[in-house]
View (cartoon, rainbow, N blue to C red):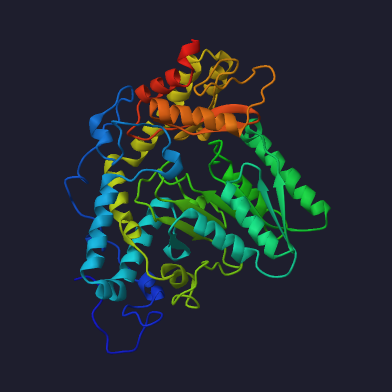
Length: 468
C-alpha cells in the first residue's frame, strides 16, 4: 500500500486529508524514490525505429491507439494522440483509485502528485519543482494567470501579437468586459514577419512604444512559444529578456501548448515569469494533463479558477485540489517520461523535425512551387520543429473545388473549410487548412507514426484530380 503511516497528531494537509502538507512533501529529499510510478511492461519496453522515415513502420504505429488503417493522420498538433504506454499507465492509476477511493484520494494521492511534479520538473528544466503546478489543460493555466495578474481596479495593459491563440483573446475579452480598467494592445504580426526573429523583436518594440506613448505601462506581455495557427517558433527567450530589461521588468506569459517533447525545454533558461504547456499533444499523455510554471516571486498570487479545500493554503495546494477529478493523466507522467527517455528524446525530436521539413519540401516539389521550395530550404534550424505551414497551390482547382487566384488571392475561411472537409470526407486525410493573408495553407504535423508516404497522399489529394 502506498501513502504515509498514520500520525497521532492533527491534520497537516489542507482540509481533512490524511497526508503531510504539500510544503512538507516538496521539502522531502526523495531522490531515487517513486519506483512505484515507473514500471516495466510489454508495451513500455517496445522500441521505436527512428532510422528511416520514407515508409510506414508498423512498430512505430503500434505505439498509438490511432486508427491509422483508415486515416492518414497529419493533425497531431490539434488534440495530440496518447501513446499506449500513457493509456496503460493511466488505466493503472484509475484502477488504483477505483479499488479504494477513500484511501487513494485521502492518503495516497498528494504524495504521488508531488512525485509526478518533481519528475516533470526534471524533464523541462525547472530547478524548483514547487513552482510547477499540474492542470487539466493549458487553457486553465492561461486563464489562471491572466485573471490573477489583471485583477483589481487599477489600469492595466496587456500586449500580445495577432498570432496569439484564439482562446487567449476570448479570455481577455471576457476580462475586459468585466473590468473597464483592463486594456489590450494587439500588435499586428504577419506570417512573413513572424518567420524573422528580428522583425518579431521590432514589432515588440513598436507595441511597447505605442503603449508608453499613451502614458500607460505594460502589465503583461503574452506570447506563443509556437503559434497555433501558423506553426511558427517565436523567439521567446529574447522577448523575455527585452521585457525584463524595461523599467522594473515587464512580466511575460508564454503559451507553450506545443512545446513539450516537440522542443527541448529548459524553462529556467527561458526565464519567463509564467509558462504554460500541454502534455497531451506532442508528449502523448492521455488527455487531462498540462502544467504551469510560475517563476515570478514578487507578482500577484496565481490562483486557479475553481476554488476548493486547497485554497488559502499556498499555490500548490490550491491547484492540486480543485475538487475531485480523474488524476490518472497526471500520475502517468513519470511512466511517459521514462518511455521517451528509453526511446531517446533527442532522436525522437530529430525524427519529427526532419520529417516535417522533408514533408514541406516534398509538397512544394510535387506542386511545382520552386520559389516556395527554395524559401522552405532556408528555414533556420532553430525555427524548425514538428509542425509546418505549407501554402496550397494557386490558380489550380483544389480538393473541394476551390480555386485561389494567384495574382489577386481572396481566399477566406469558407474556402479553407471546403478544402479541409474534402480531404476529410473523400480521402480520409486529417489535416487542418488555414486561411492566412487571403491564401490557403495546410498545417502539417509530423510525429513518430508518420512517414513521407503520408504526405505523398496529401500531395495528390489536395488537387482536384478531375481537373488535372
